[in-house]
Length: 399
Image (tube, rainbow, N blue to C red):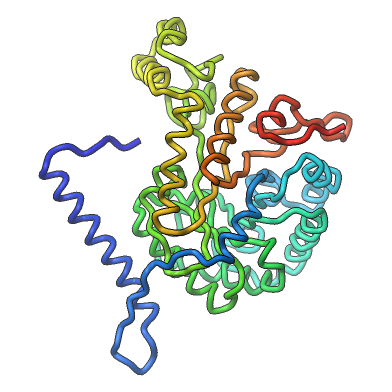
């Protein structure tokens, strides 16, 4: 998390940089909106959401991420995709009260080095069969481009941006016939572009390209970088009234990602960290950690007011952001690692986040269905939900 800026010089400089960057974004929108054979430039202003987009956002109320199926994996063969999520999985979701799925899609299936391939009819067929099965089960779909890091890194160049736009033109054309009330276009998962204005510009260009092909479908816009709550709060509304805005919520990482070794350096030191916590309840754990930085950051977790009230107060910022701009906001990722977080604490955490989101009128999707942050496990080819987690999410128990 970035620290607060102090002092009048930093404040003035920050305001100037912000205004300059906002002007650059508006000029970008103006340039793509300029009409042929005229010298007049029309600057498009951010638009409030239409009644249609709020009605559609209400469809994205209780969801689940389908990671590892067509995105977030290294295996996308028909053998894998035909067995990873089955009709039994989808029926179980519906029986539990899940209303929509977030469908990650790795563009590597359609591209080579970022360039769209021409001979991928078998891939399109495989995707369409899966999407038909999902929609046939009564579930709405948040279809999200979910690339690996090398694809995201290419967005640092204009060539990479152009390839991304071409990809979305192909996707928009292919999916134009799907029900826009039940099928949503999410531009990209966690773009990892730290410069928010650069990402806003890329989203604006991509949205314009989509609208040249499809004006009906609702687009889901993400924040920059990791699409966290702070990334949403630093985002700007796009000049389109048919957009829903997303954010992800995994805070506090000391709890949700404890013990993992692929993120912040202090996390491997944390084991059996409870939720909620106070400095007093964590005193022994803090003393046992030898790394000074890890010990201090665990203390900060305990002192941070991480409980149902504190989570609700934080999520209120997302709701306020949407209300101030008259646009819908959803949280389509939140969760905690079930392999490392204590089971009872994990259930309490997920319940508090879910309740906090619902109290703010924010739709949600948990990460994920059957992975290491999952809702279910598999036993003898049967889906077995975690009863405590289903209860925490307000879902029905399977009989």
